[in-house]
Length: 335
Length: 263
Picture 1: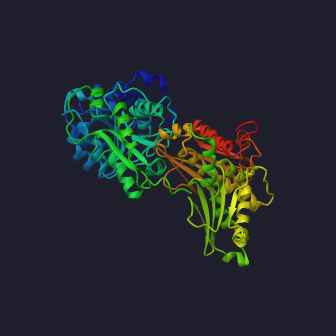
Picture 2 (picture 1 turned 90 degrees about the vertical axis):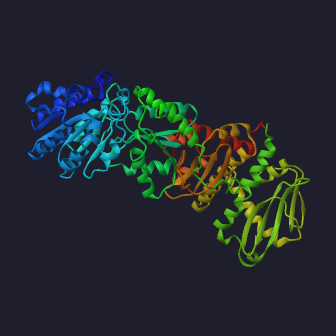
Picture 3 (picture 1 turned 45 degrees about the vertical axis):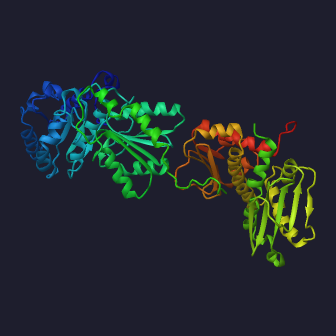
């Protein structure tokens, strides 16, 4: 954790993910004059505008010109600055995919990207503003680190960690208003290391972003039904924590992944890659937005519709528990 | 309500008697010389029923099988299940009728194995480490199998406990490299096994700290709670489930050796 950070856990209850990163970034900017904050006409929506209030001479609003935004950021990084770029996820991962890939990742530049309004968190804005493909795109870019924080507290930790992490980093957050799931800051956040939110031996939920809170709620319900549920908050999709995943497979033999993203090529697929490569068998279920353009609505309603809320997770796990993890169903040949 | 005597008998036949095979392999010199070549079948059964188990010696090997053999060489037929239970738990019951006693060699082959099972009794406290280890091993194997028999035999509480259970492993082991046994439970089914279950981490793992730690607890020389405090045993997993498992272990013990004043 960076020295001198002053945002507090109490603030996490009041501030959105974006507001917290705005604060963290501003505080980091006080100590490091190489940090440049950048956006494309979304200073208010992304909350990176907080940096502008304190350091107007180190804040660049490119206007509605996202491709230029990332190109300029690459140039600043080459000049020795530490650009932090924030705009909506859909503009980052889709509109400016080429600039992020070729200008930033190809040269392995020190550009940090904070993409807001990801997934279906801006559900009411419609499909043009949904972004259920960004994890897939970003994790396929060489050199890119991909982080999906669970809440504001984790976003603060992720921003701090990212500033000390070499190369490009993509931090994916929602539109704000996501309630906190962590109750303290010092739970040991490390890029590339999953956080075990709770231990369990019957099934493991591997999740990221807003689904972590849903998983915690689901686990409470399932615990009441006698199930022991492990939750891995896999906040870093890349580099992925293979050790934690394989340990969960070995120990619980049932894995459910939950993501606010298309189930193709997102968190679930990344986890599946690890499992398949390990050669270990388990019962496996991916929850997420199916391979469709999401419908329009408030995010909480959409989470329910796509069964990535607590109710959906409970239902999926109840079904998964009936699947066999052990081919040996002969109960008489005991010793 | 499940009949306690029949439950105990199920445990005797399926959990205790098969340990002869373990004893046979763990004490290699038990049959030397001409005894090695003696083959035959020894039956233990309850008169008028098909409840029983038999020991088969063949080509230097031993097997313990459930059921009634069509033509055993020696046949111990007990009047009741209770009489059989008493014989195998070190108490005095009505003696069985015995056919084939003239087959002295076969009887002599079986007797040391039968006596070997007395190692399971609480009053058997061997001093030698190899025998202490054997007592620990036999006890681990017996306990986990007996828990499975308790379930399969219809103990209501055990059935209620297992019926809602997803696929779970309850493991006992002596660390770092001692014997181990497990109980697998799934939706009312149960199955015991020997060694460390390799396909899934245990839901509950009771880990004994070496032979000494295991012996203190399993030979009933130290209360389990105190043993945990002293570091002789530790439990990984839900303490509530571990507590319930422990209470079923006590139930098994009480079935086989009822506390004084209780039947």
